[in-house]
Amino acid sequence: MNCSSRGHHHGHFLQTKAGKPSLLKRQIQHRLHDKTQGYKAHSHHTGDNMTSHSTPRSWWDQFRTGTISLTYCKGCQTEDFPVTSVCRNCRARDLKLVQRDHATLVALTTLHTTPVAPFKDAVPFDLCTFSFSSGARMTLPACPNLKIRLTLGTLYRLTPCADHGALPHHVSVHEVDGSVR
Amino acid sequence: MKQVPVVITGVGETTIGKHYGKTTLELTFEAAEKALTDAECDWNDIDGLIVTQPLVGAFPRHALAVAENLGISSQLRYAEAIPMGGSSSLLGLINADRAIKMEDCSRVLIVAADTPRTGQSRQESVKHFAEQRHPDWEQPIGMLNASAYALLASEYLSRYKLGSEELLHLPLMLRRHAMRTSTAAYRDKLSISDALESRVVSSPLRLVECSPINDGAGALVVTSNKYVSAKAVRLAGHGFATDYDSYVFKGSELEAPWRAYSEASKREGLSVADCDFAMIYDSYSIALALQLEAIGISRPGQAAKDARAGRFDIDGDLPINPHGGLLSHGHCGGASGMHHLVELVKQLRGQADNQVPIVGGTALYQAEGGILSANTSAFLQLV
Figure 1 (tube, each protein chain N blue to C red):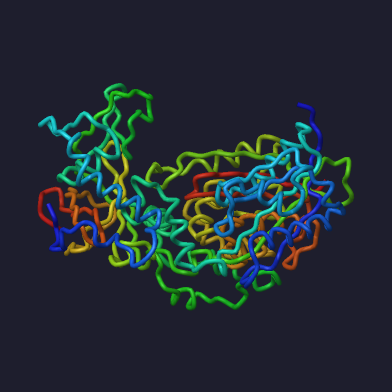
Figure 2: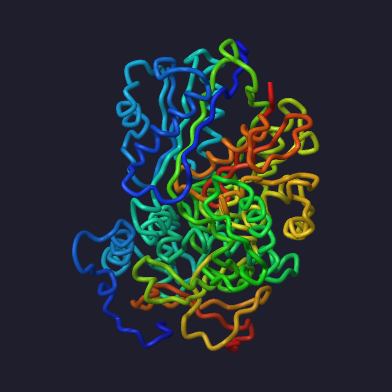
């Protein structure tokens, strides 16, 4: 699943030289810890590319295991993102994650500078906003080792990557026919 | 509710830039004292206090901490701090208007002050804003405020098939205004070649398209008009609207600025056509472009073209941000947006450096906080 050869030690970039880590660092650290430790006990696939959880924790756990998903509401048949535990359209609670990995690139920025760790060691990197056929949108960093030029308006198949480097989560993109652009 | 006419009777502001050695509370006091003097009233007359939440020198119950430092705690009948980013100052005015109309208080002091330029490093300010991004979906991917606006700009430029240099005409227009405004922090001439040489922060946005962080403060005194002298300014309709908080929850359309404007417009039947000028919150070039187009001042995709054609200049058909806006007058962190209001009042009174011809005595202020998240619109009018 990893698309680069970065080290797998997941905590090193969060260490501070001195003093208490910033709030942002602590939040990222907590989230990574949950994903690598606690979440696995609650995560389970149904085998038909759906899970019974629709929470940010479940979504990131799915992402780490190679699946990009949207929230699907059984009540109103709406697919949505970001993931919520209550449907934003009909307020139903009967939500599931459903795998969806084809989306069109609608916005792109290359971030050239940031003071925020661990990302300050990853610049420049691309943030991409993708639009799914349902209208749901998702913003993720592009794989730093991507060999292609991202093009707005292009339909891509997205593959999650969860390296433990300066860019902890990102996606690799491929043309819908399977070939990397 | 009994309808008591409410007006702004005093404005005050500090200079914008570096205030070495001064705290946010000191700037709060300076701006407030000037506003009280302008309103021809005294500290003892204030029975309501509204403040914005600063990046530097914030207290957990900021309004109460400011009140105790100003020595007005025991006389207050209303106090609050508003953490709505760039909309905070205008929402403060709207809340003051409500408080006075409900006869909760008779004179409200609204103060916005911050010292992010000298009180902390620029990197700390950027981190502070980054920590306001969504904890589940934006912070884990390294999203910054600048990146969120850059993504809006990317989609906008792609939709209208515009080059990345197009939006530069908005900061150029604002710099022309700032060059004629003594309180503006950035008054050097800015050419298109200068702007093109400006470094890219988060593509397509360059540094000149991102508002520079500064120290500064501004204040208003708002009261019922039984205390009023000449040149008072009243709120003539306001509206608020939101579609999302975080960029990642934004849909494909941006509608909330229009809804806020429409609500403000229908209160008293005013529109942009009635205005001598407009103040539009301009934290980024794209924020200004999207609001100008959302509320119908410019046609879709045409805001920068209108700026280049001089439509928003002082002799144009609708001057925008004649003090230079956040992009050239300066962005005072948690106090940003207050200087738009102070400038608006000074313009309507005919007291501004870069004075717009005042004909009808009406102006629009369209503000936004977050990533075009908290949209607030108001018409203000000479009494």
